[in-house]
Length: 233
Ligand SMILES: C[S@@+](CC[C@H](N)C(=O)[O-])C[C@H]1O[C@@H](n2cnc3c(N)ncnc32)[C@H](O)[C@@H]1O
Image (cartoon, rainbow, N blue to C red):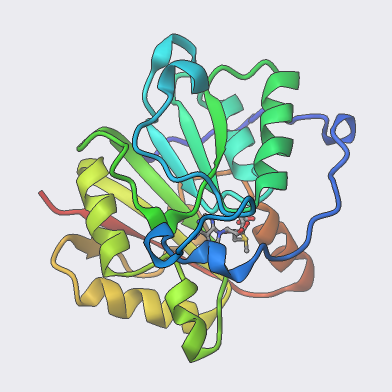
């Protein structure tokens, strides 16, 4: 993915007032369903299969995953700029996926979808070697050691990404938290499934679509690191 989109069309966001969003959902939603005795209504649906025929035109599978898509600025802009690529966002906060899918409908986007889902439950419902690339941008830091288990990024996360990405497919990463950067790079160093790039410059980062958290960082002059992990064969 080294294509740049100079004139990405922009959505008129004023047509879609954002709902009030609490920063976090119930913290138990970040843990796998197998660790719950009973699944409450606040727990995102556990999937055994995808619903491609409902999510995308012609039942296409996802070419791109936006993991923890948040308010979806990246997902929606990406979908507008690359109509041939089907992008699926996975997000644990239902209010955001409902809002994103409302914009998808309003803009008549055929290639974008956000699903209410906790990454803690894996990606077994996505076919092996079917995703061209994935993005994991500005994940929640969960700074306390005892909360690290709520971070989606782990050796298991890398194994499931390795399964769904095409050989050579990349997981693109960004974070404004040095401790998250260190943590992720340590997990990657302990895995032989991916080759990791150094931190990338603005010119080396191929996506011209800013995310919501990235815009926040830019407005406050907060630095952030970006890099990729490339799936080994
Ligand atoms: C700091 S926000 C960044 C959102 C967006 N990627 C951006 O750059 O603006 C992190 C997002 O990841 C979501 N998230 C965190 N853990 C998740 C999980 N286990 N499964 C799905 N989404 C998760 C959060 O709800 C939140 O919306």
